[in-house]
Amino acid sequence: MKLFINRPSPYGRKVLVAAYEKNIVPRLEIVSVDPWSDPAELIAASPIGKVPALIMDDETVLADSTLIVSYFDEIGSGDTLFGTDRFAVLGRVAIAQGLIDAAFATVIERRRPADKQWDGWIARQRRAIDRIVAAVTASRQFDLGDVTLACGLSYLDFRLPDVTWRAARPDLAAWLDDVARRPSMQVSTP
Image (tube, rainbow, N blue to C red; front, side, top):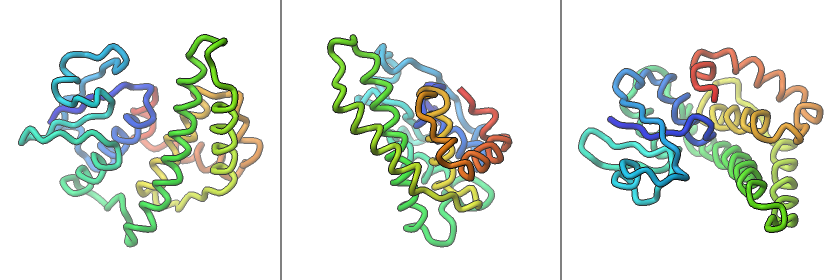
């Protein structure tokens, strides 16, 4: 299988963490790409041109982080990343994915020239980040909800240090510091 990723991507990190947790990495050819440059190999595999993208052994392409992780959960070893209540975990994944999406949208908007940035859009994303951080909880099982949350919070630390979420949620900061010691989190650090 071939996995296209970009190391700083929180979406790619989510998939890498899952690959390590499910012992899939030895079966992967990991290809680091810059999706913004529209690399021909990525575009040929997935016309979406986003990472992560997985080309399965049968040439099927999966181009969504949660879908890829679901596949890894099916074929990998170890405990399931979906716990005993798949829909409860997926509900937590959706909220944590919203954190990643809002943070990523902010980063991309801030890369535009200053006179082209939409301050209202950035403010809306910040309000979403603040609401999500205030509401989320970690399960302590390190299921997919936790993986997604850890990748989202780590992305805030990495790309948006002006978002002082740690002061607002010291409990969540302590949890992230704890799970950051997991081998899967350490080897996937951007």
